[in-house]
Image (tube, rainbow over all chains, first blue to last red; front, top):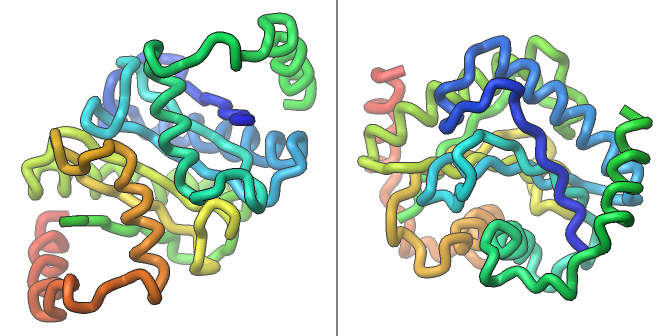
Length: 117
Length: 117
C-alpha cells in the first residue's frame, strides 16, 4: 500500500522556483519532520522524497508540494514503480476507488500522525 | 538523454534527517538555482526533483544528494521512466559505457553550467 504524505507550503505557488528562501526552509524542515515520523510510523527503512515541478514532470495540481514516501525492502517489485504509483494517484481515470481505504480510516490515520508531529 | 544534475551538501551525511536547518536551507536554495539554470539551459519546461533517502529508496552512495532533472514533453515514453533511468545510472552493471558521453563533453558542459551559476 502507498502511504504517500504531501507537504505543501502555506502560500500556494505553482513552481518550485517561486518559493522564497524562508518558505523553502520551512517546507523542507517540515518535510524532514514528516519523513522521520512516517519512517517510524510505517516501520520503514528509507524515504523517497520527490517534487513533480511542472506538468512535464507529472505535476497535476498547480500548488508546489513535496511527496514523502516511506519505503521498505520489497515494497515494489521494481524499486521505482513507486513513481508510477504516484502518477496514477494523481490521475482520476487510473485510480480505482474500490482500492481506496475508507474516509474514516484515512481520517483516523491523519489524526494519529498529526498528534505525533 | 538524461541531464541529471546532483546537488550535495558540503558536509557529507548519510540521511536526509541528518541535515541541520542551515544545511537544509543551503541545499534547497542551491537546488532551486540549479533547477532554474538547467531548465533554461536544456530548453526544458519542468523539473523532477528527487532524493533517494536510504537504500530501499534506491540510494547507492552514503552522501545525501538531490537529483535535479530538466524535463520536457515526450522526453520519456512513460513519464516516470525517468526514475528507472536514475536507478540504472546508479548501478554499474546496468549502465552501458558506450552510451556515455565523453569525459571531455561532460567536463565542457559542467564548466559551461558553472559559469552561469
